[in-house]
Image 1 (cartoon, rainbow, N blue to C red):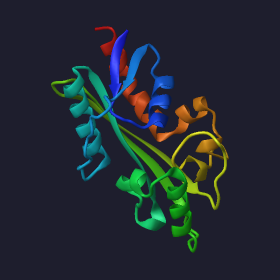
Image 2 (image 1 turned 90 degrees about the horizontal axis):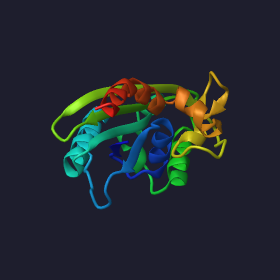
Image 3 (image 1 turned 180 degrees about the vertical axis):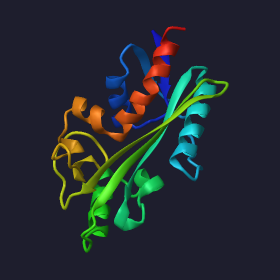
Length: 189
């Protein structure tokens, strides 16, 4: 079984990616390996994470950078989605408060995902999930902004979806499906 390092310390992301990438020995980035996200875009941060972790471990690594862009907030929280508060609860409250006086609740999740070897970037992909922000959280699954992110085609928030449903429609699931052909090729090497 081939080893793939996920360039994240986020347990929610690790859990979702392990469910999706069967047949791989999936490991989180080494504890203590901190990567400063200095990129100006999701893709730049994903590149930085993937290459840094691949070089530090000597294994293939997947780096991703994801965020929520809210149209009425000019794309915020965007690159700062994970740092918009100290906890998921605090971030949700801040988002709902920021949207108190607006009718436009359109939003989208974006993931840029990069696969790197210790020597180079191998593949770059992106996934986008369009939806809207509800007035209050619903559901107990997922993590982050999932409880307030409503996905109209299914009539549910991302926190109300099963893992299998979320993998089919989410930004991360889309990016992973685009990455999968390369991962399948690497697994045979």
